[in-house]
Image (cartoon, rainbow, N blue to C red; front, side, top):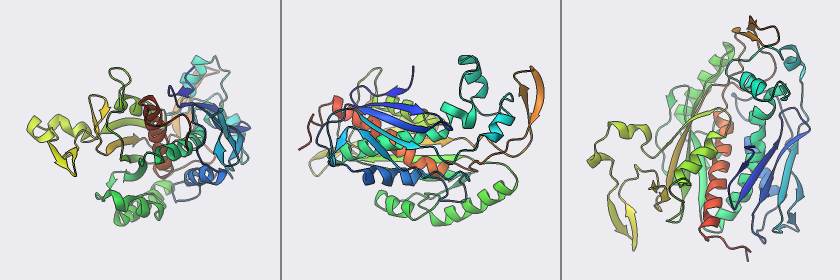
Length: 363
């Protein structure tokens, strides 16, 4: 029973890739938050396929439907139910290979856990398709965080080993929205696009890294020792299909640093305590420091590739060869950017409510 996230701002995900719809129920959102369908749709549109050379041929309209919790442009305080319909569905390729375990997918683990009753079409519950619900919840969370002046953004910093140059925070958002790969470095983006085209021609896929940033986060968010801010952010981000690693601030690089190099020295700026560097990524002792929260997620290469692969026929219990058809992304990093933002926003929103930073009624 792991379909819900959060304690006060609770998000429950539902739906499968080739079912009637995917969506989300959000409980705990204060009443009086001004939000429209267009606000939510704008975020969902950023996740849709067809915006870059990396994306799948499946083109869903993804028109957001509000079933409950929002009336006359404001949240009512009741649970919010949002969904998008699955319309561009073709399950024929999955019927053909339903007994063949797809390497890199959850076919085997799901088969064993659910006794073969899981929906295998398009990956079912384990598909990246369910992240449309994550993004809808993130749209609400972003609006709530906006009442505190908190901003969440993300960008692609690496695809297929090609790394983007560092960019100032204020330049990331406008640059990313103009770039189909959501990379703020235009030179690196062009190289990434060329690589993706070559990989597509080879019938293969590539992964990459998305960096998420939260600005103006209040000091004091986090509940040690088991509900730490970075721990819960990592949990939320690892719930994104294909995310295999999470690091904060200097991340794994700290293993090669000395304490004198890694420690963020304190100082005062405009009457506020800040740190001169941010190797901690905005979190100390599981609690926000007030510095920007910096987190990076490693996104694995798309598992569905055109190359023949060895596998097992789970029905006949014998080895087989699998060639996957259907419509698949070559690289999901660009589409993962708004999902990373959403999961960060949902987690921060929950902690802000737990800290009493957001009132029960927005006025």
